[in-house]
Length: 150
Length: 142
Picture 1 (cartoon, rainbow over the protein chains, first blue to last red):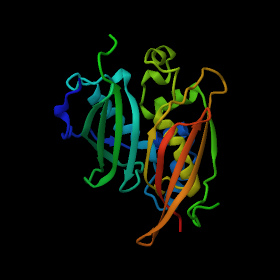
Picture 2: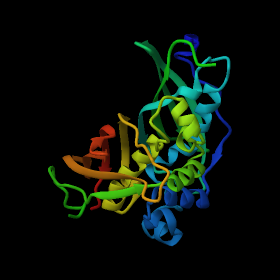
Picture 3: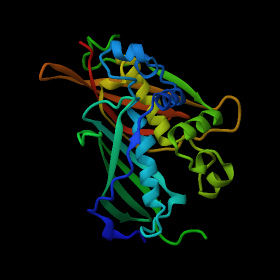
Picture 4: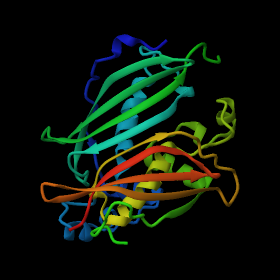
């Protein structure tokens, strides 16, 4: 049974994530996004950006590892092996570009148990090196309630 | 249809993608999501799934390509959200799973001199919708 006392709490900020050009190119290639501003620095600058622009769902690269570390922590008692992703929202205050140093704080917003599922809503507040907001993401994660298969 | 003159009712250029196991492995590496249900039949079927399934975030990203290729710039996407309603099962063959992506403008509004389109996105696999309430807000090029 996941520990409901976590609800309403924020985790310690994760170590800053350095957004790299090659990581943006690698991620864009993996999703088949050939946008010039995600691949070509000159094109990005010509479009008014400081550097390569990350595709919208790039946030997964640095938010999911923080979420995974929390969910694999035995203190929370979450069945990570049976987890599925219920929904995902991403809202940007500004675009993510190469060179950004981003800090993610995970907030445990809600935990519900309905029928045979635990449903957990985690919010990630992403800020840059100056502490300015960059993005907010919400993930609904679902795992089966009841005894896990041992 | 260009994004700059977008109006409610416009359809975005659709996209068809064949997702193979290689695509899932590449996405796993790029995203850091190494959950074995996305590459191991043994683990996927053990978890009660019909087989290896695509990352929900990969399907979300594919639908997101409609937005970025439409406006030409990923920074145009202000918000994007979806539910993951059905799994995309990816067979261990050379063809992979066919995912069909489409999008339609449901609203265009003026926000302090910036035109913002609301786009409803759809992703279909095996004739069925796999994303639910997929919606984005996109700044239109001037």
